[in-house]
Figure 1 (cartoon, helix red, strand yellow):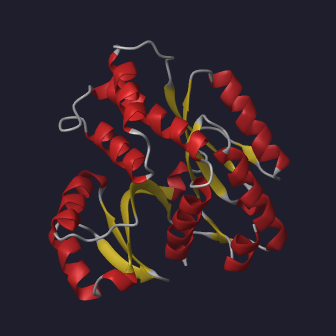
Figure 2 (cartoon, one colour; figure 1 turned 180 degrees about the horizontal axis):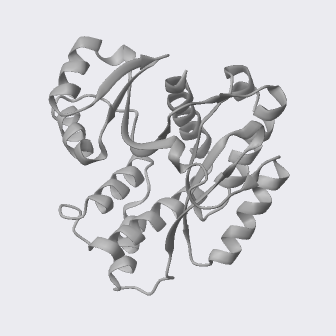
Length: 247
């Protein structure tokens, strides 16, 4: 059930953001800028930058946008100063929610997030209030119809992955973030088509929502997605397929 939550929701989110490219590109480029500022412009020695660039490319972010963001991060071009902050809170139905944020104004962002949680029946909490419910993992999603399960499992485990399971139409590979790049390279070397690849927070347990709370949670995700400061949303909700399809 937990697998259904993060796999299905990654795929659902991917489909949702594809229709909001301008806002998505802003978020992707902001992540590239921060990575370049923290670790330099060389993706070979700056893994955070490499992952940010790879993610931007997976969404067809223009090359000029990527290069400009790197130059802003290294100081070649003028740019705002962004902070990397994790906000935590409780969504409708007691769902644990974490928001990965890059902001140039803490007060504005905190106010926006507090209002978003409140209008959807939740509340913004203190640092650490829900993060203990999550673990940080590398996740790869591969469409099950594209490769045999035994073949993919052998590739993944030999590269250092922790586990692989089938969740609906996908094989889901999980690994320690430290070996994320090794697993990625192994999949590329074997020409495995990866539908999604990212390091993210995975919940230890989940909350299945009823119709009313599912609608509120979908609304909360939409509001947070529309906020340029919010990079990623992690939650331990399970939204039944019929509510996702009608959203």
